[in-house]
Length: 558
Image 1 (tube, rainbow, N blue to C red):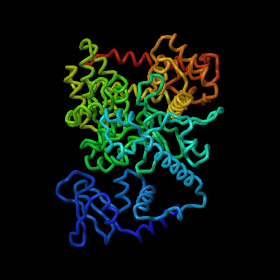
Image 2: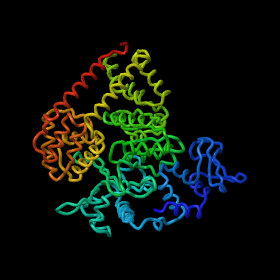
Image 3: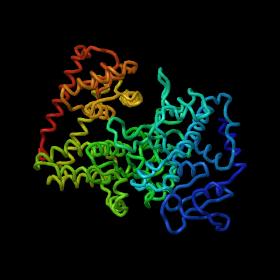
Image 4: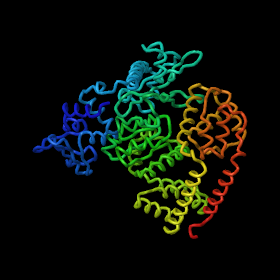
C-alpha cells in the first residue's frame, strides 16, 4: 500500500471533525469544536478539536493528536489500520493504492465473502428447539438478531450443497473439513456465533452444542486461516471497544454467552477469548484501549488457574488488573441471567489478584503454616513481578496482615524469590538455548488438540480430561494407567499428525515430565525418549531444585 498516497487522499476527502463525530458528538465553539471526551466518562465537555489545524486535545485524559492518532487510540490499532478504518468510513477504495501483488488481500476478501454467505444460510436455519434453548439462557429474538446468531443443521454437506463456491474455497474458509472419503460440515448441529474482528469483518465462527453430549466438545471454532488468528482475536471487541474507552476498563470472560449476556447490562465493555487461553497479544489489544482490566473467568478450579495465568501476564505488562470472585461452577452468563444487580455488585467489588488469592488460600488452608506455604507458592511470585511500586506496597501490606508477619519479612521473601527467578533465567539461557520456543510448542499443542477434535476421535472420559490438561499446559498429575490409556487412544488415531520434535527437545517446560514422552510417542517415535544424553543437564536441574527447596524452608523471620 502506498501509505502517503492514501493519507493524502483521506485529507483531501474529509476532516478531523467528521471522523471524531463517528465517536462523540461535537458542537461549534468559536473556531473550534467541543464535546464530551470519548476517552472518559466525563459530564462536562473537555474535548476540543480544531478543523483548521486538524488536531484534537482531551483535557480530561491529557492526550491529543490528529485524526489518525485519534482512531488509533479509539480502535486500539496501529497507523496502517487507522488508514483502512478511516478510508472505509469515508468511502475511499484503498485497493487502488495497493501494490500489484494483492493476492493475499484478495484471498482474505474472498474468504470473508464465503463466511458472509454461510451466515445468511445459518440465520435462516434457527428452529423452535434452538430458539427455546436460547430463550432459556436469556437470549431473546432481539439479542439473536443483534449478535447474528444462527444454526448449522445436522447435515454433513449443508455448506457445499448450498454455497456457490468450490469445495476447496469453502474448506479454506474453515466451514468444512476435507477427508479422503469426502467432506463434512465443521459446525453441523451447532448454534453458531459469527466472529467479527474489531473492524466488523467476519473472520470465522464458533459452534456450540445445545444438547448434552459428553462425546462432543461444548465449543468448536474455525481453524487458523488468513482471516482468523485465535491468539489475537477477542470476541465482541467490535461492539465493546467504545465502551471500554467510556468505562476505562475491559472485562475479560471465557465464553461467548458471557459476552452476549454482559452486553445486555450496563457493562458492554466485555470481551472473550476465542478457542484458546489468554495470550499476550490479547492483552496488548486491550491495553491499547485501556490499561485497566477485570478478569471474570468461571469460578471452578480450572477457571481459577486460568485467572492466575491471565493476571500474571497482565502484571508483567504493567496493567492494572482486578478479578471477579464468581461462585464455584457459575459463569458470568449464569449470574446475569439470575440477577443483573448481583453482576453489578461483583464488578463494583472486584478484587486485586492478591486479595482474590489470599481469600481463597485462607478459606482452604488447614493451618497458619499451610497458609504461609501457599502464599509463598502462589502470591509472592505475583508480587515480585508487579512493577507499580504503590500497588506492590499495597500487596505486601495485605500479605503481612493475612499471615501475621512483618512487611519487612514479606519484602525479604520477595527479594529471595526474585533472586531465584533470575537464577532460573540464567540457567535457561545457558543450558536451554531454545527455551523461547515455548510459544511455538504451545501453538503445536493447540494444533494437535484441534486436529484430534476435527477428526472427531472417540475418546474416553479420562483421555478427554488429559487432552484438556495438555492444551492448557497444566502439570500432568495422574496414574500411569491413565497415561497409558491416553497414549494408546491418541497414538492409534493420529498417525498422520506431524509434530516438530526439536521444539519439544529444547523446551524447558516439557523437558522433565510425561508430556514429552507422550508427544514423542504420538508423533511416531514409538520408543520412549532416551534421556541418558541429558545427564549433565539433569544434574544441573537437580542442583537448582535443591537451592529452591532450601529457600522455601526459610521462614519469614529468618
